[in-house]
Image 1 (tube, rainbow, N blue to C red):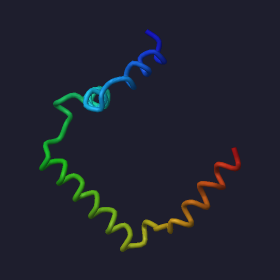
Image 2: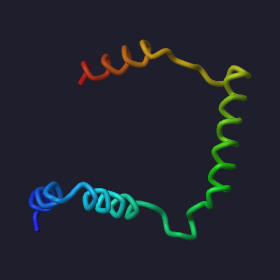
Image 3: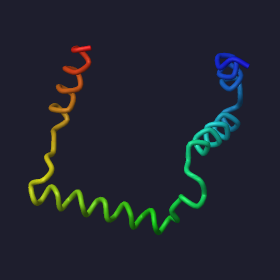
Length: 81
């Protein structure tokens, strides 16, 4: 079945069924169960990453950007294409 037909059929599903399909498709990209962290492991990993990033900022190894700077750079790169 062509992708276009699958998409048309999926869009015709109820909200609940589309959500189930979305979850199933998303999970198909997830690593195997033995590679998935438990909730406490996941939270600890993110806490460590946040601490690392804050330390990098405090010690001058990272730079922050304003929303305006990001949008200016984004639009500049889009216009160059």
